[in-house]
Length: 337
Image 1: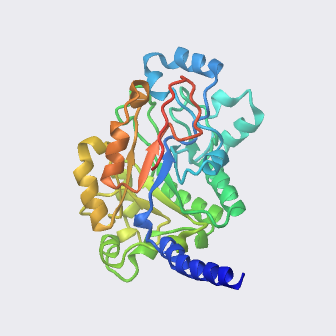
Image 2 (image 1 turned 180 degrees about the horizontal axis):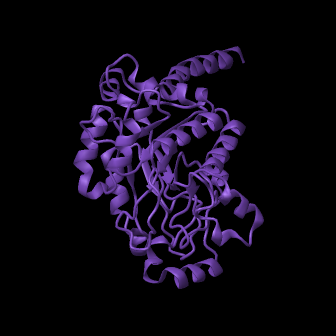
Image 3 (image 1 turned 90 degrees about the horizontal axis):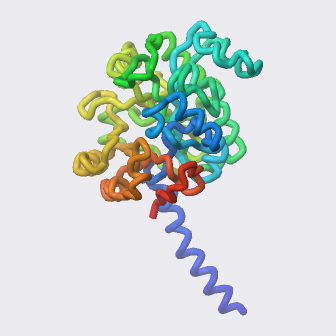
C-alpha cells in the first residue's frame, strides 16, 4: 500500500508541472471556437419561412441561428460577436417592436442596439448592446474560472455594400465612449483584458505585443476581452486622443503596421493562410472564419476550416459549432481537434 501511495505521489508531482505550464501559456497560444453573429436566434420552421418571405434571395446567406448567449458559452464557445448600431437618443429602431411592451421599452432607451439589419432582419437574443454585455457578464460571474471570453463588437454605421442595410447614424466619439463605459460598468475593470495591460511600458501597443507579449492564460481566467470591428473612419475615431488605445476598453482590428496593432481579423484563411501564419509567429492574435454565408455548410466543404487550423489562427468563428442549431439539416459541424 505504501509503495502504491509513493508511486501515486511521484506521478502527481510529475504531472503537476505539466498542468502549470499549460495554464501559463500566453493568450496568443489559445485556440478557441467562436460564433458569428452570436445574437441571431435559432430559426424555427415558421421564422425561417418568414425570413425567406422578407429577405427573398438574401435569406440564404443568413439561414443560421444560435441558442441563448449563456448556452453558447455552456457549449464551450469563447468568442462571441455582437453588431451594434448607434441610437444615441433612443427610439430610432423601436417601431417594429410596438406590439411587445418590454422590447419596445428597451428599444426606446438611448444606447446602441444589436440588430443584423434594422427593420428587416431584426430578431435578436439581446436587443441592446448593454443587455448583450450583461448576459455575458452574468454567465462569467457564475463561472469565475472560465477561460478568456473574447467579444467582437462589430459596430456598423454604413451600408458596407449591403443592399438591404438602411443608412445608419455614425458612431462618433460620444457613442464609442458610451461603449467603453458600458463595458467597464458591466464587466468591471478588473475583469477586462485591455490594451493598457498588453502595452505595458512600451511606447505602442504593437511594440508591447512584439516585445512584452500577452498576459498568461491563467491570469485571464474569469475575464473578457473586447475587440472593435468597424470601418476605418470609426477605428480612427476610437484611437483619436488615445494613441495606442491608451485608456480604452477595447482592442481594434487595426492594420498590421499601426501602433494599435494587436489582433487581426482575416476572414478567409484559404486565401490568407501564409499571412495568418506570419502574424501568429510574430505574436499577434488572429481571428478567422471556418465558414461564411452558409456556403461551406451547404456543400459539406471543410477546406476553409482546415486552412484555418493549419494557419494557427487562435480564434476560429463559425455558425456550425457542436450543439449549434441546424435549421437546414445539413449535418455540417466544425470541431477543434
